[in-house]
Amino acid sequence: MIRSTFAASAALLTLAAGAMPASAQEKTLTISVYAFAQDAYNRILYKPFEEKCGCKLVVETGNSAERLAKMEANKNAPVVDMAVMSMADALTAARRGLVQKIDTSKLDNYDKLYDLAKDPNGDGMSVGYTFYATSIAYRSDKMDIKSWQDLLSDKVVGNIAFPNISTNQGPPALYMLGLSMGTNAPDLKKPIEAVGKHAGDIVTFYNRSSQLVQLFQQGEIWAAPIGRFAWEPISKLGLPIKWAKPKEGQTGGLNVMVVSKGTKNEDLALEFMDFWLSTKVQKDLADALVDSPANKEVKVSDDVAANITYGAETAKNLKLIPAKVDLENRDRWLKEWNADVAQ
Amino acid sequence: MFQNRAEGFALALPAAIFAAVIFIVPVIILLSGGMHVNGHWTLSAYTDFFASSLDRLVLWRTLKLGILVTLVAAIIGYASAFAIVSLSPSSRGRMIGIVVLPLMISPVARTYAWLVILGRTGIVNQALMTVGLTDEPIRLLFSQTAVFVGLLQLFLPLMVISLVSALENMPNDVVPAARVLGANWLQIFFKVILPLTREGLVIGGTLVFVGSVTAYITPAILGGSKVLTLVTLLYQRVTIANDLVSASVIALILIVMSFGTNILLRKIATARNRA
Image (cartoon, rainbow over all chains, first blue to last red; front, side, top):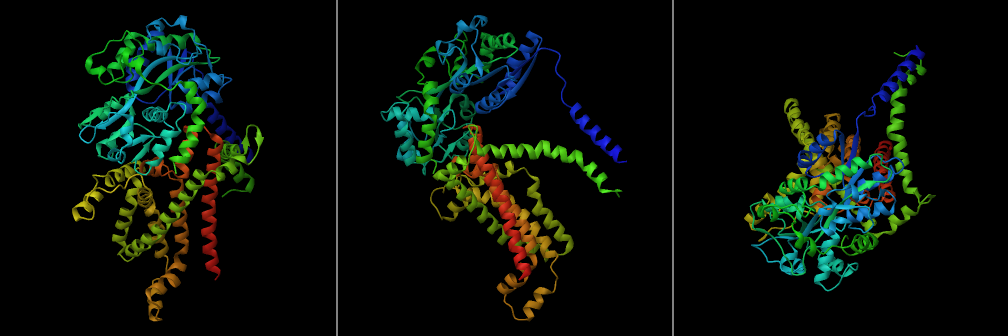
């Protein structure tokens, strides 16, 4: 009797082990991307690529930091073949030896990219696929924004949401605030202190730009620094909300593609990246207001152009914090923020 | 049913192995991560946590919110539980159904509702302005008050249910007996009802307190980064700073707080039992 129960337990365990997925027979490419707009990506990018290559795409989603942590954990046997991330995270990945040089000779569309996207970190380890401007969305019936400093003026500051330091928009917004106060990155102490002085007035420090839609809609906030990718739903609220063109200019960011070091699917990964950078895919993604094109051959209608970050002029004029500066100062910024703003 | 213990043990084995492999071992690995920094065993992550004024502030705020929510839930809980047990059995069932109903709605939906209710154009501010108590909307969102209200609404049903079942088990004649003997209502509550229902209070109190200090959605949505609690701080440490060491420190503190509360509340209950 005892023996049979042990046998039953053993059988159960075997069953559990047998439930693990069998290794796939066909060619698969595993990618790790941001979670937003997956329906559009599926339609415009993933499905057509699968048909073209006769392979299977496995898509993992999550934020940059999760991605980095996973890549680090699987360093010796990479699970993900190709990933997209922020410039700064791509530099971290390169420094930790998680990514490999990109053989741009295999990317037919490489020469069509804006210069800023070609090798953003200058180490040959990443290629930009989209960039975005960050400026201030504001209620034009309540205020006028001519400078980043206007955000902290007495009439305005009690009605704004400011990006938390930990978001991709946080440091760039502080950087622009600093420029308007006469300082320059990497020194964000002065703008952080200025925000800290008003921490009680500011409605909230947001962590996800998707939160802002409801806050604008409820009249909770009248202005917030946001990335262009978050503009579309806010522009459709039916409220008089404008995209500011402050005199200090606009900031923003660039998202890049990387290839995991030691991947067994390098050629397939490069083929996928090239497809993503192709004029048609970049245009379709732009028309769906998902990603602003990094491919300079993409021509979009005025309507679309007005709602994404578009054109050589814009690309050239964005005031970006270099990834190196970002990485080397992040801890310090966070400490200053925690001391001046978070408490 | 089973002929011997070995057989029962054998039957429990798969579940035990499963729990060990899937739950216990990972938890131990996770928690030991807070003491294993750069390849050395050290408590430096813990001293760092308590040395940081932000971390101390968040810990204190979390404790304070948990205690406050539990206290207020107990007060409202006793009042509602009294009202419910005084009803006829059939309406009692209906009332308990109504109390439990919110538990069946996702906490995300319930918390989002508060976002609308407490907003500048929400019903609370509109009422205040109509009555003339304020000229312009008061800011309620992204404050400790908002988090408190959200958590109280979230966990109050657990307290009410625990107290209803405790009061149902209380003999019917003890309150009239105390009154006959000349006790006032305060004396009746503290000397008769409270001792007889403290087990329900301990269960409800543990559920509410542990629920409040470990809740993520409510403080994240109603408090945001202006009202960080231990759990939202933990989330930030993991996803943003990728700092698993200090995250595991926070996780251990949360576990200690949860077990600690339960032990403390049980101690109080049994101590009174003996008295």
